[in-house]
Image 1: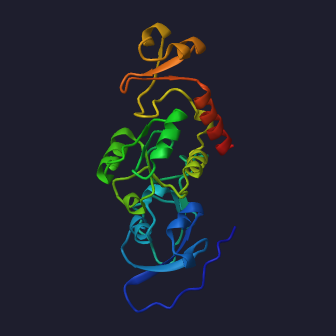
Image 2 (image 1 turned 180 degrees about the vertical axis):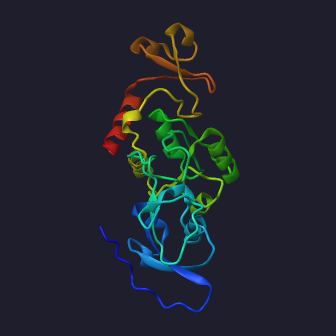
Image 3 (image 1 turned 90 degrees about the vertical axis):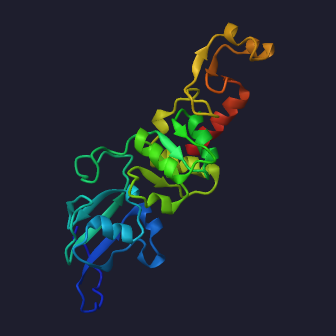
Length: 260
């Protein structure tokens, strides 16, 4: 399909050169209203990389997974030219674009997370569904970024400025404010439905749970509970015991209903 270019703006007689940008899907969340969902012309002093132009327009690089210039896939180091038509796409989690993207060596398919201080409830819900999710209420931005780099985790945050760090390769700005909607958003964004593994993570500390025998928890659980349930799960770090009681099943059913 032939791309339509917007009408060219008048430009001063400088060393600046004009190129056309089009950002797709949720990348528009980072643009001012007059630039959302449309192609627009922007002038930059050259030489300049496409990385620098995208950053200057306020788009976190960690949210970008594909850049096409004049219908050709390019990397972040591509030097833009006058008249280029630059199409920028967000992270594709529900399809494999590894054959065409030139931005990263590996696809963003890891499902390990680290979340910021604003997303504590979301962290618990993700752990409940079995996802390795690091969270601490006092965790600072530099620690979050370091953990993401070391463990190849996806950063989930409500902090747009943090995602502009050049140190972040895997990150996502959570648009929703309400905790239940946040879970729906993340599950759909990262296509997690087929990966649910309930009762594999401690909701409090994220440690992997272990199966434990009744006789080994006699002094940790009431006798009434021991007599009613067969399966028990133990967190060796915070010394908690879990079982599939009515409370958990209600929570699990509620979460699953939310994301259907």
